[in-house]
Image (cartoon, rainbow, N blue to C red; front, side, top):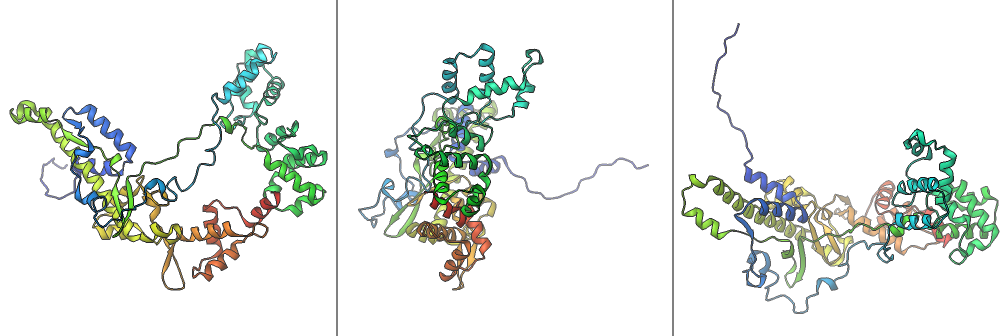
Length: 472
């Protein structure tokens, strides 16, 4: 039987101090998350406060702003950021021109329900179905599943629920309450508006469109008009008119009542052009200005440390917060300046000039760990002449070229996007043809790589693009 004993073993291990843990956490936060973190610290720590000194009275940091804003060699006719091409963003909002509705989809449907002579029981069932609609106006659950939710004592059968659904589907907008895409389109073709859908005035075209929506939507999506003509047994003119009619329909009836989420980002870094080239500076609008409460600090300096241990601890935490916030922005600025130096051609020529860049390159240049670079580029944004981009967008693997150099995946995608934009819509480029054109420019990649990049750009295959052009 062994006897219990105590022994000491010397050893070494790394421990993250609270200050280092806070520094790592602040670095990986976005600007909005950082503001929330600082607001919480201000509420919990009375010794930490915002510096309310007007910005024009604050001495600027020469390492951050003097190199650009106070550069005597900078041109006098420097472009404003709102005048730069692409300053509104890389991808415009497709629904930005859509008029906003004052009411919600539910309110719109309930107003129509109140105008009907439906019995209270039927109105209650229609209300239940309205509450089950998703943002697109589709019924979110099957009728059989909804029927199971109802108490048995109500004695509601599926036919009664189906009648309530038929009443709902007669409301505006057309297609509301559909259970799938085919039913949504068929509901809109049940009593089409001739002024909005002039093709529906022809009975043959309307019948062909209804048959396509009911049975051949998958075949229509393949973009094979010859096969579709053979199945439907119609001439080319009728099929073209039916396709044009279907394109005019609304696949998401609830779109007008769906308020899109605001998709914007406040840049952490601004890029400006000077005589010395492109320079990165921090956006002062997202930089919190903190300071120690002078009154509390003076009182603590005149008292015994043991008597006010709690306040002294908060004083130390406030100093850590100020130091770590400054270190966070210094790290972001260093990383941004290194990115601008590596991707200088991008800021002059656009995405097609993006060069291959990996985290290891920046980490080795700045003497930082790759994880630090990853934290400093995640959810951090840079305002460039081509829009506000996440710093992560400037990193990407390389594709070999004939010259022995390499092109980034972003640059290859930009070439593919340009080729598709300039192609003959009646004879769109296939993936093989795009591959051959890229090879003629010295970029040698496989056809499957072209297909992968094309899908990443959300560009349809050549057959679908040709069919869409024919439908127009």
